[in-house]
Image (cartoon, rainbow, N blue to C red; front, side):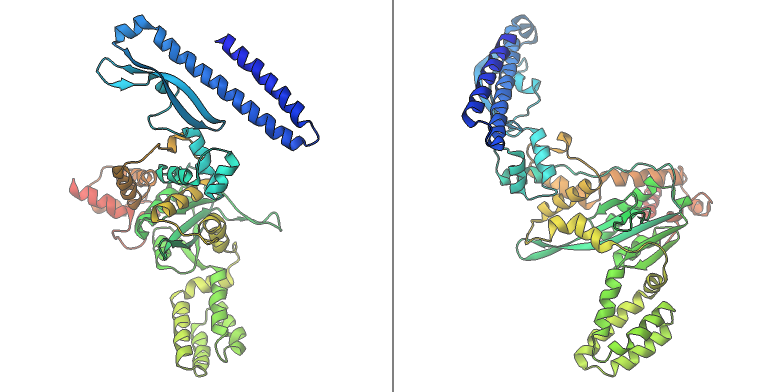
Length: 475
């Protein structure tokens, strides 16, 4: 073995010297590229030699193979696997095992699965790169001899990547939740909504030029219904924080109904209208015919939470509108009326500003919708999942890579996602178990130790609590 590697090393040194002599140092970049190619080739030769020696060791262990009932079926069967160094080519032996099955024992020894054309390590790197760049660029960056379609296939075959939540030592008195949606193009000529929730401990304003969210954790719910998504988020929040110590939970959003449901499961929740959306609707109002002069008094009425004065000004504005403009005005007034408390809170609040739009832009839109892209449903689901995983500091490793997927695997993936992420469902089950403690009656609701989230809002099928109650009733 040492002799083989020594010879490869000698040949490698010769190739390096020839490369330097040929390219010189006048263009050091070109020379470095040439040397890298030579070094990769040498590394592949060494790997091939090591694998050959391992295969020979199995062949030469005749006594051991005889005891185990392993016989040689075919020698020197070639195989090529794409690695981060390039194409690794080697020969190995095909064996028949004692039970009559056939196997390449050397493949198992070096950790390569059947039909694995690209190593899992390289697949993980390619998939990770697609979180921030196009699939073609991911291929270019790694220098792998694969197509962008191969990268897409590996992304689709990726197992669910979900951020685990760890309990914090010190729970803050305030939490800030930012919720919004990204609108993404689907093929063919369709669209989809990807909801995003970011849970933070506030905004760090120590750098006046760049404010940052404190300890943000992102959640996306594409492929789930809204209730399932909200249950996942709530379960993760309770896993991370002791909610009995949280005095206020500020929910910054645009007034969407699914976001309001989130508030019913949070203790001491206060809705705060997102500043971007508030200004957008105010501008729409003041652009109506004759509405501009009322801008100051309308803002004042909102700030003072004087809805009667607001309605009076609207009555004056409506008289100046034609039929079509009146319809637009009524839609705007309906929005302000339905979200009045959260709008007043935004106009008067002293807590951190809202950053829902920047979070959507940076976390999702940058990869999903900013460029003229159109996704398949499955591709969008995987990419949205990967984007959030990457933003939460996750890295794709070989454990998340599957060589291929059967139709049954695709169906299982779809059903699993529809029911929410397994890890968050597990959090919820543990939390419910700790609250109920094996009791089978409703007196648990009267206990002082019951977490606030389990007693807020209506008891409906959207809550984690009802799931637990249903299980208890079945006992």
